[in-house]
Image (cartoon, each protein chain N blue to C red):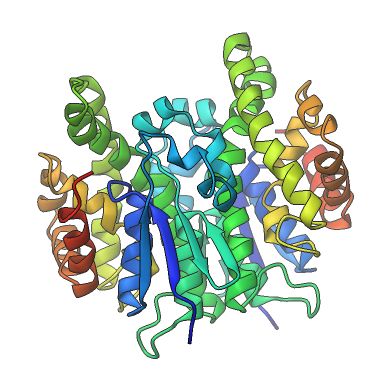
Length: 231
Length: 231
């Protein structure tokens, strides 16, 4: 019998949601072990040995960037960094004809580029907007309207390029859904709950792409998990 | 005859140096086309079509983060994002027994995790220190000593974890040199030119690893290129 995969994470954390989406997309069974960040559980054993970088996260940093630790276990392998876990799952459990990542260098390269575009271009303004408009109000702080305007402008410029890209192909990595699309789901999900849905909805191709990838059954299963949690 | 690979970039930019190191490591011939960032060449054709994200980079952003555009052409493929280019080269032109990246999911996953650790944990403080201690003085600005102290403390915490990791294996991704090590070379090279070499040299295993990877012939070829350039 295969050993059950384990995910240690937090259901309000984009990296955790990225990993859960990967697991559901590949029809894999797993156990989810929630980490109570506010109680500092991520800085204690057994979690500490799983993700050595937890120690370097102060609580203020976590609140500021809504950054939380994530660890994944599959048999003897323990892995951290949500995109590395997403890549591992896609390489280890591919669905023939529906691969999320490729061993062929060229298609692998294009998907890798758009995974990194999400990380370096889309993610920074998206995360700041989500923090200002969702997490700050939830913790009793007032959003910084100047910061919101600045980050909205940055995100808009990035999405102009996405609009162009999505005129060339149905998905960011090509004609099929890949890890390059999946990696966007958590922050798109949060953005769509804020007035920033306007930067998405005002761009027809980005808007259609967003609706298409959020409608995937695997993502609905993640959303169910998020909605059914109290913490 | 194979079409010559082309690299468009800037020899003071860590992403460009990462790509050049990958090419030399794989014994590939290429043409280097320098981009004059200060003249705004990256926002003009033909470079603009090669890397669509250049448009979103303002000069102040470039100076602040020392972030510059990079594009790579190999036949019909045009790729951006330096780590995606590094991955493509390693997948497309592997040296048997000396692979930098792996098709096997488990070893691929471990290398991917440490590539992302560089990106998310090592890079932010390293880049801020390099900016304060090398690029600011070069442009007539005074380093912010408070910021330097803060970033040094952050980098020290990250390198404590590297010191532990390098007790388990000779290199970050395992017993051989991989893309997980290579991706660190540009910022290590700059850090070693500042008083911040102390955070590296005070950690025996990190210090030995740094010396080992910087002594690679491919990296010496990159350093030669950097030293022979006037801009």
